[in-house]
View (tube, helix red, strand yellow):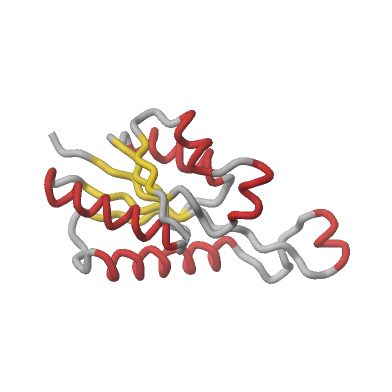
Length: 148
């Protein structure tokens, strides 16, 4: 039976360490790695757009998808280097919900993720993505903490 591992990547050091750990598991079990990026849609800088939380007029989901694919490719090349047994996914939405939905849709056996993303201050107020995922995921979640 082939294992499947989902690794959310946001560009943080914590996410990179999670990917390194997932690669160790991959070597031991021949698991297939699914890398996921959930792009943050930028907020418009004009007064009205910023007030309602709208995206800039020139933003397109295609820009976010391309930037996400580049981020995943760079992360994979830095850690593993080969293109075997890896699939890239870029999905917009709320990170915790997207991660859990992708885990369900892909039928993964585990999620390996960092405990701290790029938006640490925001997570203090609304709760961390890794904390939310660990409570609602349909599979085991390995959370790696990288000390500051």
